[in-house]
Image (spheres, rainbow, N blue to C red):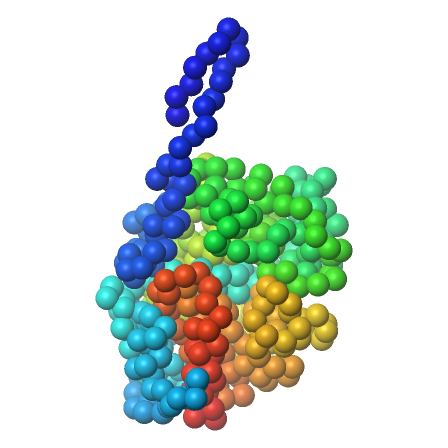
Length: 394
């Protein structure tokens, strides 16, 4: 940026958009995103989540999945699904065993760590549940400002952790990626371009009263990550390693990529990366009421809280404009039924899924490289196919 001086005043001419302003767009554009979504540690600063010494192999019990699903008045195969929805990794567990696994992505494989985007929100929720059981966080009724005093005087001042967990804070605009000055685009530019991420979140406006209505918000999840760090005195990666990753028997270290500006911070709403098999282990944990190998890792009541909400504004079909009508929401997870035994899923932009059906004892991980962040039609087709697989095994 050039500057000119006139007397004692410094004039800053309008700045041309730089590479850093557009980095997010470049990372997410096809066909580059098939590579970037498996190599985020080459592009951004990172903090690793070591797996520790405990390894619990997932048994292999492969079986053909020659089933079809019905969509758009057509019978389609899983090969059609992968082609039509740009699948890069696909893992299916039944009764804790890998029954189907494929990696259509050009750069994907069993050891590839996948960029999970907003599945990270579901991971953050699991960590919040653990911190509550640990006593590091007192209650979901606590306010944000009980842990982050710098949010006094902002629209988040009156919000509770429960409001953030259910995306009912009432703060922030609609999360749209194709509007250059939307809140989420300014957040992305700050994260990747070295801006002040905290200030972007602090400046979000209030749209409705807390607890009143659903509005999907990465800002809400980001604050939850910051609350977790303040409450535990650990970085998000450090706490995740100690209280979660060391217990699930992971194949590989995971990692969070961090903001470019210092002090660097993980994006609790979107920067977690792990192998598809290890993501499946997280789903298995949620399918088994938070238990791994006889150990209660995530509290049972927290897992049940994540499977559905009694709040009418969070029920399936009632989310409004920021949620598709085949979803409800609860505790940073998307729900697909009213019962705690119904399927639920973590979701990430560009087609990332952690689908859990406790009744069928099925977990499905689907990583993708969609050309756009959101796509209602591809999402609906994917959920139709995943439910068909679960029904097949049930």
